[in-house]
Image (tube, rainbow, N blue to C red; front, side, top):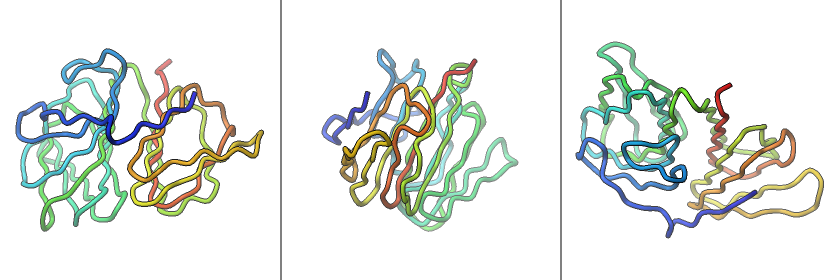
Length: 192
């Protein structure tokens, strides 16, 4: 099943630590801020600070606007996000501190319960018929321009307007391919 979620359906919710707001794009059915299996969101980071604690979750943070941010985890490992679509994958239970390079950034977040879902991120600056991989759920987001999903077994083309989120469930290998620019593809697969 393919669904395109319009930005008007996105919700603004407070950060778990109360220090800002997140645009929640989609969350699993019945999920809440404190109890969910997966959630996709976008947030502006306007100052340096400690990230919310999401113990038992895997976090993926993708830079989608601004000059960049360094993420320091547990006072040691540092992920440097400097370019559009750079991303970091880290344990949501880590003490993560964000340090902005020069000013405000916007990030795209994928948070999934580690014991239930494996997450794979594929960021494409220029996508030419990139095959969609097998997964339980696939999300596709195009930053600035519309993208096109073409199907292997038909001439149908599904358009994804910029800023909209496409959700595909029960994805079979090679059933479709995506073309466009500055695209984020997220695969969620149940842990065995």
